Length: 509
Image (cartoon, rainbow, N blue to C red; front, side, top):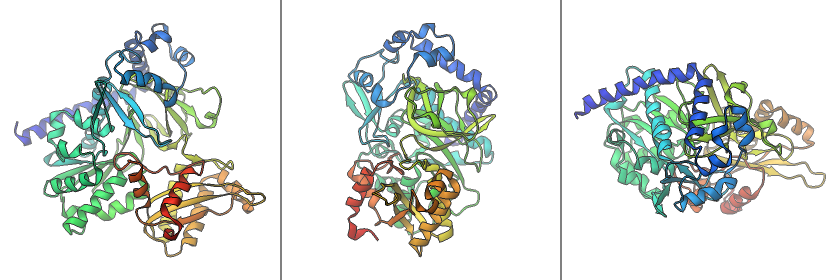
């Protein structure tokens, strides 16, 4: 097939999908009910299906009452049985693939089942939808005249007991349809290289002379690659290397801390940024409009969604609500049942709804990534906004950061300790700290109350750390590339102490 004709056909196929997206936007509750009962019907004769008598469940309330909400540690034993080659435990079709993920809540590896249905009807479908939504919003796009540069994780795919495991990105690359592989760079061989730093160099050598029209990857790691491209080519910006570049499809970490750096690297008023929300457990949401930070919740991927209000997350008996009960601008922990056999699984992310017609969301953080030692209820959404303001006022830029509590000691109040790696340092770190503290108080009334007259919380203790500290920590943990990142917030000090030790006091600026 000639490439121009191939591009025209591909564009036509992707645009046709928009009708189906419009349908679930119009009938969201009906779509989700259909998803739930399709899942229950499909899995009724599995071990889990028989244990909870899926065949007799006739409505959502019965499902919610009968099936418990679980976290990974609670489902790990049955996942391990599946990894040993046992079938029909939680999903009827054989699970050949397991996405290995360390998660961001602990260092232990997680192995998330990825069924063939999930590959086809969720992950790969979402990749097509990402392109569908972009080309429908940008009729004059020429994105298919060139190639998309994909930057996945650092792990290859490995075999164990006739099942395969690896980073989700590696699993997807292994299963890409021919047309996606044809229109992507680098080659599959390079994309699946296991050693991250060697892979980065190989990707650059393969792509600097290609016509790259789109980028796909995690912002933090893509930034490393793009800066290296500038270093190797000697160009002033990325558009001098790839003049037809149109869009960056990104996800995995909050984009706000990186946007100014990207605008310097890609100095174009027409360049687009499209955010996605995906994880090893599934692909959940895609930005469906230009120039917005809202994501459309994708309702027909074989995932049934439930939501736990965050003000009830500490309750002994967790209770979730369905999509039709959610409210605007309220934090929820996300619970999913999937076409890979995860049933009422709490993935650890928190979201809020910014629109109910259609259902659009923002990612607000992690259920275990917060600081609430003193009742301040500080979440990642607060810290990202506050850091953005502090950088704007002090003309600085941040590469990475983490924060943890300093516990009270006798009559001495507590505080928050921050480690920040700057790309552009503020002239005065004390001023930066004051602006950060003021911004946090303006964004979070609980934090503001605890800061009153330093009675519970003192002003934050902010360290500027050496360049590469967070990179070194990730490398030490074997977490370079993909969606791995240093946890932004922690309610304990273990990570903080580990990073301080790695930094070594003489290297703290």
